[in-house]
Amino acid sequence: MAVTVRIPTQLRSLSGGAAEVSLDACGTVAEVLKQLEARHEGFAERLFDGDRSLRRFVNVFVGDEDIRFLEGLDTPVPDGETVSVVPAVAGG
Image (cartoon, rainbow, N blue to C red; front, side, top):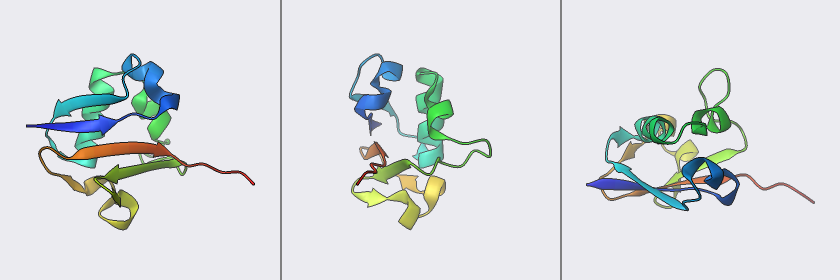
């Protein structure tokens, strides 16, 4: 099976313009994002800070659930699930 990763517009240059990337099902959010980086170099630099935690302005969802309210990067990603990378929006 596969996992679908939805790529936000701001990062699509890293995925060759693709809005979605299909990856092998691999267990956790951390493993999915590692595989994404292996296939499309540059994602890790944009998603993670120096201590390998997600940057504050990057939100990741498994299905409709924010991983910050689950198990963070250790959140399981079932086969066939969708992982969405969503940049935080600020303004006033």
